[in-house]
Image 1 (spheres, rainbow, N blue to C red):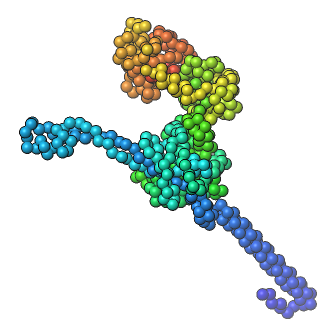
Image 2 (tube, helix red, strand yellow):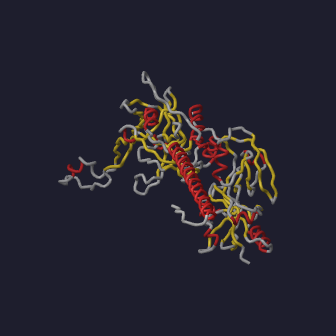
Length: 506
């Protein structure tokens, strides 16, 4: 506090003015502080409000509304097991002969049938009685039952199943029971960090509710060709397979399918099939009893750095065509082995999984533009897609046919020879295999590191077909004389083919 002191009149006047100015300044500073505190409180309340909105205070209302749509799936399966094969045999009249007859009889092999049961979860998707679950829950089942929360147990029939996405559709007769159905949501709109709720009905104990967030999208867990899982930290345990994953609107954005665990219990890493993938599969299973996926008719592989250098690509985006079966859609459209698919139906593709899913989700018979990289240029081909399921059936039916003198040579750690009757028998090659075959691979060579094995066929060298050992040697010699750092070889093993890039040693 300022205290005036005795001075001349001018000094007193100046001191009074100073005191007034200081009091005014203190009042202004207090006003600023008050405004700052107010602003802080407002911002804090807004932030808290936003957080409270994102993190529900309770999931009780959602759980109460949605739990009746979640059911337990119970299956029984007849399993045959051998018995009696380990029992000793005794000569006639031995004291133990009659004793062991009661346990399978004289050591003879026999079969004993037993009933195996399994439990999973599912959910009602239609009040007429359609139920969704995982394929692995009902796979091999002789009998399937749906058990509701009130304990009512009804038999179910299989409408259709798809092992590739692990989805199955069941149908029940609701009778007088009023079913509660859940509804699909759009998983593509879900983001990492969004709250989700998983409901299961494991072990027939009744509904189990867990909550968490989406921790990742687009996970590939190597379970099938169309893996695109939602990863969540909501607890998913054994028996929850086939149950729904809900967003905060109460819409299904996923089907809980798998967990990552070394102990068998939940460690906070669960995986769900996204609804956008499951919905189309379910629709086809209901309509046709099976899936009807688009088929491009190519054998594909990802582009590595070595392959990109050999093909003259600036990056590893795109999918390399390693084989084109004759009479397939791609073959008819003029797509060749060695082409790199950059776009499918105007959508960029960066890896095989993206292309496989894009093709599968396109309607059979559709005309689609495919952008390719060929010989350093971009070209476009129009392909009319076939049906994958028909192609797989035809291939299975057909899978079930010139010998020449063996001439060998060693190239890049591989010992090569022309196909002969002896080599055909040695490596169990089909009758249509001709040309050049790998008969040995040097230990520690790059060819061995790239998983080239004896019995593999060499189809092309640097995108040029080779029919003899001499063709391979000539092509390798030509490439070694150039400034290329690697050489591309198209190999075939059994029914699959792939490109391999081997470094050039000058």
